[in-house]
Length: 286
Length: 280
Image (cartoon, rainbow over all chains, first blue to last red; front, side, top):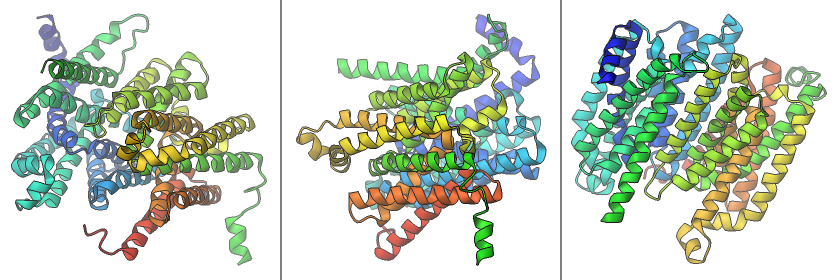
């Protein structure tokens, strides 16, 4: 297998090896949280949290705090605000929008202050378009730990969360605390989105959260299978995307390397489109 | 008192040419965003209102790469993403198509930026806007797009309101839900094209969602909510321009804070008017 030899070669390069490892972890966590996000119809919140987190990153940059805690701190504030303000379905979309709008305004202010103070423009830009090849080694361990925390939370919540997501009214009638389950899920979602936003940029965090999950929902019937497939599709897109991005340095005519986020997003889209086509064929034959 | 007024309204606020352009184009964008945002809030389509202007950013990056016109790039990408969302979304879907179309556009944007040699401050300008950097020619273009959108809203108002409030009844009466969804998304694309060069991709969204969301709590009828969202949008932009001029800080920050404050007032108003509403 040429691909396997290539991956083995890539693992010799420390930056690429870290990218593959961290990217895969993030893809698994996003893939699992994404299934519930899609089923619960919280795609907007899932996307918004990525942008919200970059505001925290700008604040962290300004105050010289570790960016991960900036992402997680603001993400948690934003996520809980969305959860509290959007307690009725009709209001959820608008509340998400307002939280997003407010944090983006704050982001404009913080980036303005950063450029005022430091006249450095590269730093803030890498906050907005983070690159998986520049993950700081110090971040690896915290990301691993927070990933375990998010997966653990999803595992503990699993049964009530599935119940509350698929049929909230019945779950409520059977005594499941739907609101509490929703809030705890929001915490897991915040961790998933913020760590992928940190290591891969806000753009990829949305793609990895929604794409593999939406594809897996089309392909499977049992929620256990959906979760496994979603995590697998996410990891596949990340690994293949990193390999292609590495390869693209040798592509004519530019020889300068295409961004990894572009490849991962496109691979995720291919997975989703394939699942749509498959589903349509199945429904046509059924 | 005069002293405070002097501080708030320093000379040049109204007379400097760049400020005059900012007042005119800012007001136009506020009106246009409030008109379209009213329907976005009514239809529960705030994600789309965020995604289309944000996706159009990729078009501007593409225009920079091939040396084309920025407004044209914005227009093409916002139209493509709006149509993509309109035609790919199925009825079961609750936002994932919007998220995926947005991710696709941003992925392309990342590619365009990497392949071109876009200068970082120009990228900022597209994301966060440069309301004080607008030329007279830009102002005319924005006024034209605003007029076009306002005319479209005037023509579509009744059927679009009907299909947004009661889609099933409207469908039974022969008003196509799908066709009006496409038309609504094209309206969003049009307003995004006008708004992004003025307030930026990220904050054209503030003007779409904030005023309309606040007005939805205060307005007693759809028409009064529509006019109220226009009024709140205008007041927000004007207040933000004054504050930005006084402090030198970004306009977008003040727009976001002021519109969110109006929304907060709306929520409180709804709470006092109907204390049980929020407990449900």
